[in-house]
Image (cartoon, rainbow, N blue to C red; front, side, top):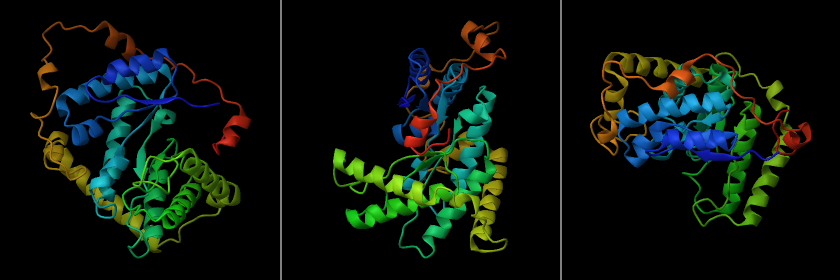
Length: 308
């Protein structure tokens, strides 16, 4: 079974979400923070659009993917690790408020630490394991390295293998495929075939390694995860005091400042009048079981390395 995926983004998140539901897509990238930071969409406008689009996804039984991995393309993956966790916690809250179930929250993160950093793989393991333990029921989306792919295809292939190993050890659910020709050219089909071979080998050789992977209490991985979690709690406290829009304006996420009154689409935000009624929103807010996603055969899931 081949899962169909698309993006609900820009100034038409609800419209794209509705089309995805009608066409019975399986996954949709849905995170307004990407539009705010990287496409200069007005924060107020896109948070409103995001909620409605996620209500549609919830009713359609579509799994969303969030875009925290993008923060690490501009910010340092070590020093900004806590901003990823905070964004994931916020996305979980906003997602559930819109009606999404745990199994529909494909929270994103990435393997983007500079490989020249000492103990970089242990740091990646700490971050990935922390996210898995924070969201045990979520189908986590794990992005491969892109920022530090230098054009050395041999080093890139090795780095992708370490990414795949980290994903297996920490039970990441939606494992994107790393390309050793990242940053050189659009990958050829032969590049993609080799990348799939890399994933297939790691999954078949070490697919059950996560059963035995237990960080030593008080060890390096455990301490690093605790540090990131502590920094995340502190940042959440600041956001609680100052407001999320102010945090975005200050460049907290992805070191890019986006004021609440700037960006595209603000002219489409209108204050609701007394007696305002939206029948579509009213229907979507009624408690109801989401539509079941299309069934996949165990054989098809096994072929792509997922769990049936």
